[in-house]
Length: 344
Ligand code: AHG
Ligand code: MN
Ligand code: MN
Image (cartoon, rainbow, N blue to C red; front, side, top):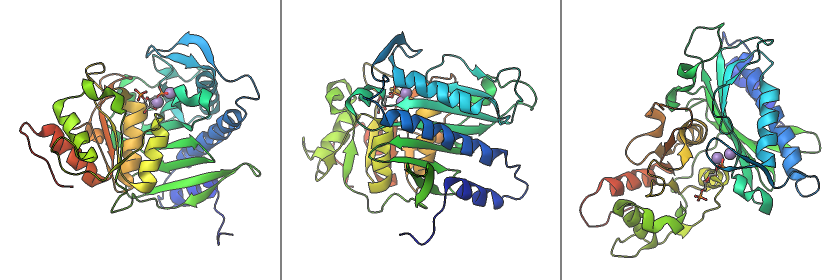
C-alpha cells in the first residue's frame, strides 16, 4: 500500500495552486482529457467483445484506413471537450481542417491538438495503443473562433502535453513543461480513478542501451542513418554495438518504454517519406515536450523539434527522441559526411 493516494484531479489542482492567478480553466481542461481517456480505455478494453474492431471503410486526410476505434476516440474527445468553454478550436489527426467549437458554446483561451488513437494498425491484434494530446494558449485575442495562427505554434510554447497508453494497464502521463516535471497516473478500473503511480519521471541516466526504429526501411535511409544503426548493431566498421532493438510500431508505446528505461526512438526520413512520417503538432511536439521535461531530447536530426514552427496542421517531421546523449549521437551521425565511427 503506498503512503499517499493522489488522484489526477487532486494532483492537477495542487499543481495549479503553485501558479497564483491561474483561472482553474486549465485544470478543468486536463480533467476533461482524463475523462475522455477513461471512456476510450473502457472501449479499448472491450475490443473483441463488442463491435469496435476493424475498419470503418473510410480513408482519413492522411490517406490511411480509419479504424472504428479511431473514429470512436475522435468522437469521444470532441464531445468531451467542445462545450466546457476552455477551447477556441481543436486539431486532430482524423480531421483535415481545424475543428471549430459549435456556435452555441462559449469560446475559451486554449487550443487542443490530438491524435485520438496512435498505433491504430495494432488495434486488431491487441497490442498497446495510445492517445496523444498537446495544449497551447491561443495566439489571437479571445472571443473569436480559433484560427490557423493559434494552431501553428512551436512546440516549446505548449502549456501542457501528454499521452494515454492503453496497455497492460491504462496510464496517463503528462507534463506542463520542464519546471512542472513529468507525472504518470495509472487507471484503477475498480474505482474509475487515475492514481499517481509515477511521480517526477526522469529518463534513467545511464540509459538502457536500446534503439527503436523500423529497420525494414534500411535500404531507403540516408548513409548517415544507416551508419547510425550500424553503430548500434556494431557492424560495418562503425564500432559501438551492445545494443538491443525494440520496435512496437505504436509510437506511444515505444516512447513510453524510452521514457522509463532510456534509449533512442527514431522515425527517420526515407526515400518513401522524405519529410518523415510522424506529424509535428500532435505526435512529435507533445511527445518531444514530455521527453525534454524528463531530461531527454527530441530532434528532427539537425535541430530541436520543439523549436520548429509548423506551416500546416498535418506537417510531418523526422524524429529522434529519447536519452539526450543518444539524440546527440544521432545528430552527429546525420551531420557527418566522412567515414569513421563515434563513441557513445
Ligand atoms: P497512427 O496510428 O496515429 O497513424 O500512427 C502510427 C505511427 C506511429 O504510432 C508509429 O510509430 C508509426 O506509425 C509506425 O509506422 P511504420 O509502420 O512505418 O513503422
Ligand atoms: Mn499516431
Ligand atoms: Mn492516430
